[in-house]
Length: 373
Image (tube, rainbow, N blue to C red; front, side, top):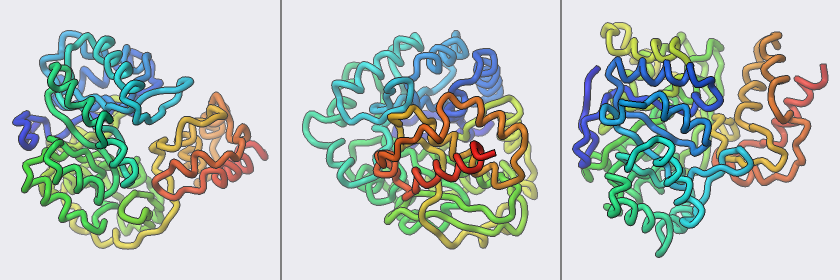
């Protein structure tokens, strides 16, 4: 494993980190196996994005006796409501969730505390106004509960403001082959370098879609104006190529691919031993140039859902089912606690979605496909 300095934090981070979003809902032994295998193989940057009790308790067991070996993050404003992810901008509401994270993990601090998931100008203004979450993050830093302050988001405009404000030490931003042509991306990355802000690349596989076998793939991503990418792959893409692209970008210190199993972790960590030929992504870049609106990246920013639908997982199953509808996909859909037919067509999810997804329309498609059998 190679290591890089995370901007002005001075932290020495593994260039391959670990996102933990896909460990939500996994059995404890599986979580423990993935986390401990990652740490044993040199991964020392671990992003903790959620606040679910079971998720944190599983991670606590996995990290027992290893806290000093790892750099941990938390996300201020990532809360939960009725068992579902919910973003909050209330300092009063978000602080207890963060303190619960510390308590469950048995640690006094996180190394980086992210101001969570800020994309719009309205949201940025709310986040940074007096007595808002930015002030809370600063207080928590003074109290020793957070060493550094980070900012996570999906739009160039708000990320640039955060960088140039001088108040954040780390930026977490989507960087992948699909986003190669995002307007303003080069300026954003260069701004991180010039302001010595550490850069963490999230979504290196674009939610897994870059690794799909289909030749034609439609992928959403949020950039100025909100668009999505449609591409025809001329050749299959490997995890090693994805990571090689991300780690070649200006300013990137680490990337946080999500791994739900030891097999996925092994495919990710294969990057470290890959040959130059295996890492070569140059033939792929030409495929990434056109963008369309309305594709889901399964981020669940649309939650919470009044009908308790796991929207991201549901649409992921729908997208997977564009291939022949297998027995396994039918079983996966049948196992969902709330089906797409529970959708009340309230439209709240569509308002929250930063990618322009017609969520209720996708729910109707899902019902027709999975429940009309």
